[in-house]
Image 1 (tube, rainbow, N blue to C red):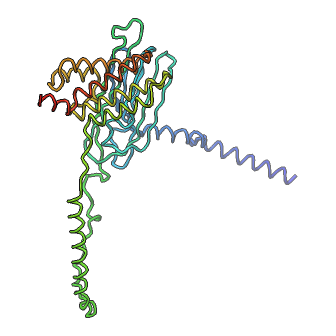
Image 2 (cartoon, rainbow, N blue to C red; image 1 turned 90 degrees about the vertical axis):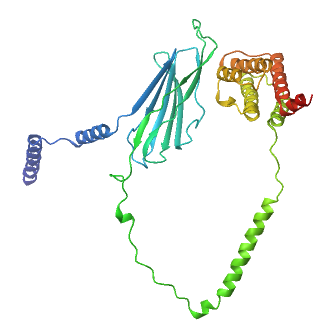
Image 3 (cartoon, helix red, strand yellow; image 1 turned 45 degrees about the vertical axis):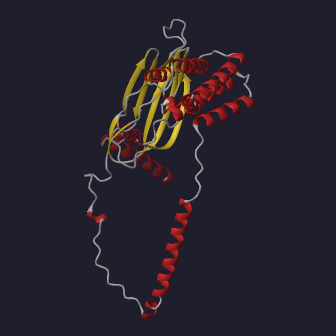
Length: 351
């Protein structure tokens, strides 16, 4: 009977406590946790975005925090979505990101419920300094292969605009506190014992020997024979010969990489030989630049245009070239390098 009364009293006390909590506005622990999460989400900065569109392609650049504090990493995301039958080429990893230190990188591709394909690249970067900064511009290339496209098979590109943002100093007012620059008292004059003074002569001898050794090393390095760098045409022809020895692949995926390698050899040669920024330009942009420049005559311009356009057709469309066509492109590359090399130009001048 005593035990029953005790249990009844405990239940009564618990009921009274529950009623008091409800009356005072008390909330369960689960509700408090939900409120804390909501408050944390609300405190997060609003991302800053920049959008660009061209035809069937839409690009969005997003910066996770437009007002970060130096030392806080930010996430820079490039999201591109395109209609079906549009071949999209995303920027190479790290392209234009030299000012920032990449801490992490993620990429993905997916088919959205609305039928558009989405491509994403996300860089987690460490900021180099405080103050005003700009995000890099991303170059996205695409080929519209839709049946009703007016630009079918033509390489087009979208260049995103940079996002301006301000990196805050780790100090609220931007000035370093005096505590970090403590004032030290003047150091007393160093007095060497007599035994140390007697060793000064040997210290001077050792210092003189070290100086003589350094001077000798500098003179030897200065007179060392410097091996000159190979001319651009020699490098290109060796690379073409290496491709010839390996043979032309038959697998469609391998032939695509083969044409990327061939056009890369030619573009690198043009950059080294004529100081034209060929690797960074599209075929159309390079041809416009070549027409304005006098380094290539008309026949050489048509030759390189044929090679690069054929390579673009293989890289950006479903076109699979025959072995005869690939042999012809390899021969065109060799012909172009041979005709435009420095040795060929010197021979024409002597003639």
